[in-house]
Length: 536
Image 1 (tube, rainbow, N blue to C red):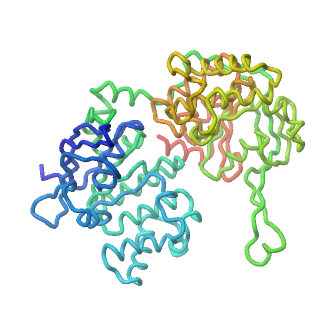
Image 2 (cartoon, rainbow, N blue to C red):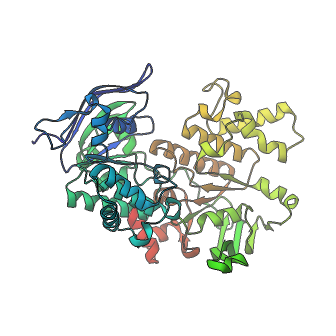
Image 3 (tube, one colour):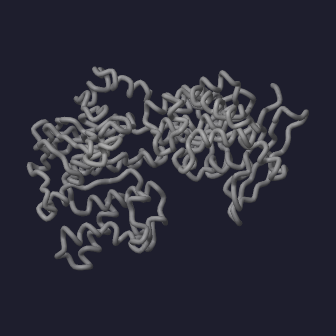
């Protein structure tokens, strides 16, 4: 075997007195694709950042040997001066960050951000740098690169921003590319496109790639070898096919077995159950400015949902699939009575009224669980205040003691008790993990005894093992309470685990609908087939 491009030996990372990575060893060969997997807090991202010395206030020890090709012997990155490390960053080792919207400068055009790298690292003249930026954007397959090069980050879609990030990373033709969850924020079909792009670029340029991810489907599809981290320890490593077929460590087996699964104890909803949510000709639109001088005098219209027809029965889950911009979130907001709409939309036989006071009863019957529990829970309120807030509106006659009893009961129902979390009611959201915060959000929705809960990507921000736990909880609550769910997601595995009926949306239109089994096994519309193929 030739000398590795990157050799990590006994790497330890500590913040203050707490060590978070405990003496790990691994290597990457030139041209190899390696996946580093593990849940949040496992140490995978700090390990990747340490390769480029991008960790602030961290104490690093061990060795990170890198073969930059300019010397006869590899150099230890941890022993280099800051000046030498800056010379390696972007030129020999480049990085694609998880969220391009926060990684890109919002005030600079995409072309300016790429040319900045070329000017600093390769000392290219401005005209040559602009020409090279266009070449790179074209290489990444971005549509209309002549126009995108002059766009600001917010003017691009998620997939376009990620392609721009890849163009920046490839600007100096690095030998090692570190990709930190490069597809997490993207729709399923865009994930496939980005993976295909990285695979093509890796083969074309002979890149070595270190992929940081918790998506095991991505690992199966992309990587040659996989490294598994748990609590700062490297617990397993080997070829992807071997590790997935015969995992040796219990944690690896746990990750592989954490794919969303349908509850075996599920009771099928009754065919004659009453309809909880019915839409006929549902239409949602937003005002948008017209281009040019016409925008001074009138507004245009963007139609987000076009004539949608669907129904949701009691005890049933209706899954809504589609990419970003398909209209699924606008449909959910209409069901929640939070945006204006036309057509007929009824919850428990009642339409949303333009008068807020008339909707009070419906507000109790329809609740929501949002995608990101950390941003949807107030950091200034205690658990008791967050979960019990709905009772102040919908059950104002309860005494303080009665309200507290209801809060404790709702928390226990989602698996949060004072025995496990001393002082539970007086804690704040930041004192809980992501999965525990999502349980708080579910308890907040349950406490007013709703009939319908809108689930907006309820597990996309969670690790795979936590996703499985939350989905099992939601299925148990549906079985015990007879709840109906309107499930908004782009995760096909979640649809398979939760939904009874499915509608597929594309550009505001329901292009296909039907029961779960027929739609998954015999999809009729090409767009549905594309979504399912991208998720496999």
